[in-house]
Image (cartoon, one colour):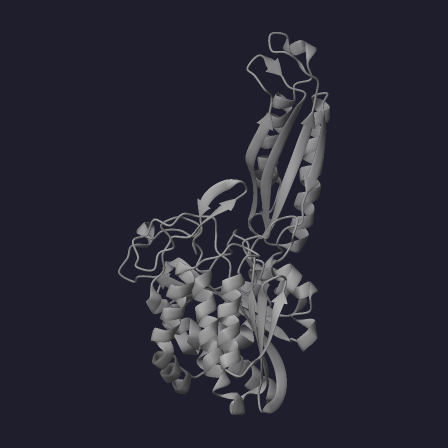
Length: 431
């Protein structure tokens, strides 16, 4: 990966200089900017949780049908797909936006702030677009409008994917990108490549960040159940103490990261977020449960980490006279930016945003289910600035927080990038 990045950086200046900005797209995006912002405000004020994006889906569907696109609905529960077939033969590119909001109560003083309330996991909560998915939907709606007006120029087909449940569907339901793929959103249309954008509240408006290869981490929840022998707290020698064994396992998991993995290759994160066991202060329980998350950015390292977690937990428990059951669950995959598609599409991004505004970044240990598209077809996923340029980054609110906010001025560039990437990829495919 280090050699790949080095080669990519050395080639970038030459490759990126070849692309030219599309003035027609810039003018058209400027003309509809106020509409895009209006769509975003409507969506922000009316957020819906994962797999419950019923009104959002209808809003998107109405817009796409109004543009004359072929539209499919009800994919992965509430997903919407628009199909734009150009007047000329060519390839197929998918552009993706996610639609769901989060169980977060908004505290930002905005005229279009969410007042929506619901029940989530038995608790009364607010609902908020606290990760910018409202901007993603609005930008892709804008790109669909621009591209539909240039149908005569398009050499191939553009698939607009409006996806539910990126933040995670209810366990009993499933959903998100995984289900969209399973239900044929790529295979039914012979999609060759997928492209996605994520707004970032801590990157200035007008700037774009990207990374070839592993850009965002795979996320895998895990559970370790440590089983011992219960006894009175005054006589610990009569017990097999799962609390002590669990504590040693937690330390052991961290030494996997600090002493066993080559972190010069890619980062690894193992975090225990919940410890549960016991009922009162003077009883050593017979069982303790650890729940946490694993983040990896390299497929081989991911497999290795899983094996080491299992060995570490069971060996430490056994050394204490206890036992440990390890369950590592399916999660999102590594969001992998295909190097060749990155090389092909980034010149368009650079030409659209300006060379000084595009930045190669380190990988992000957050996760994205865009990874399920990237697993099937060569793909590129980039990050778009949504922070007021006058704001200090240290003061910018983070994602998934009640004071999250993005600057509407960032949306126009997103519309342009979606549009130009589709036009350039399909045009290049024909040539």
